[in-house]
Length: 233
Image (cartoon, rainbow, N blue to C red; front, top):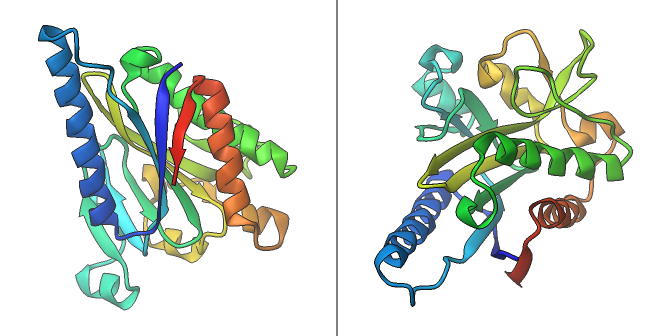
């Protein structure tokens, strides 16, 4: 079974976490390249980074800048940062109370299918929500995890955006646990202007045990991807 080292980064600046992802991402790719000419080089270790971010908006490669509805001074008033980044997707928000998970996986050790990879990430969140009595699913043609999927009241509880090169992944999951949803009013979330955003706290009517959600989600990811944790810091 593939081995994954889980690293809990706590509340960490977005750029700092992004730089750390890039370091691990490059490390895995370099090791894969080295294996081509040297059989003694072992398979790379995979990583699962778990964290929260201070208020930040990130725009993916396929996003539109006008989906951010704040100018630079208004960003400052809301104590929020803004980055154009190298994942797929449009604009999204990260902030305290949102569980952010970055799998940096060598998919050659799992399966080489990005569509399947995305569906497994979604499924882990869906199964986690089920543990708390929240029924979630998918909306056809849209990425992420949703409630009331087929109804006008459909609302998004988890966003996904990934980058992959040489079958190595980075970026990942933004899962609204106890998130301040007011910050989503300053963007067109993921470029979708006709559907709402929600959180576990809003759906359940009270604050949720963040660490419990994190533990369950990691268990679901391990079961779906069939990997073992070698360290959980």
